[in-house]
Length: 196
Image (cartoon, rainbow, N blue to C red):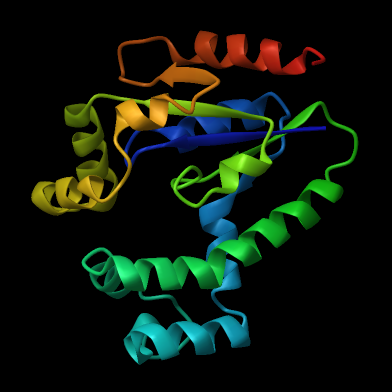
């Protein structure tokens, strides 16, 4: 089975694209959702608290305090690297185990925001990049998360830019609200169903 990456900047709409692939019966591994579960393993929780403090989890120690974590790591690249060193190897292991359970399908998708930055793309067979204009992305983030536009833009500045991300792409999907999304996904899907 082929292992295909799916990535894009904040607000690019990669989750929407992933849902279309899922509707085509393509198994989709949601790295962010799976990582949230991994953060609750006792040994991971201990390491995260050692790095970021007890505030990394809500008062009941059950929920991840994503806002606190974002404040800590987006202003401190060293902390971000150290946090990634805790979680990324576990996500890679979890993805491998998940792939084994998918049976005989032509390909699976691994959806992740920082697939390239983490180096996870190196273990994949191809990469799909989802793009949208900055103004469209900002509107989506504001509507979805209620995030202040300045804060959203500052966080985007911490991510890889579209031009650089595009240089890694084997397939590009434009999700700007005016380009037809489903035909683009179907085109990529047909290509991925073909043998090497």
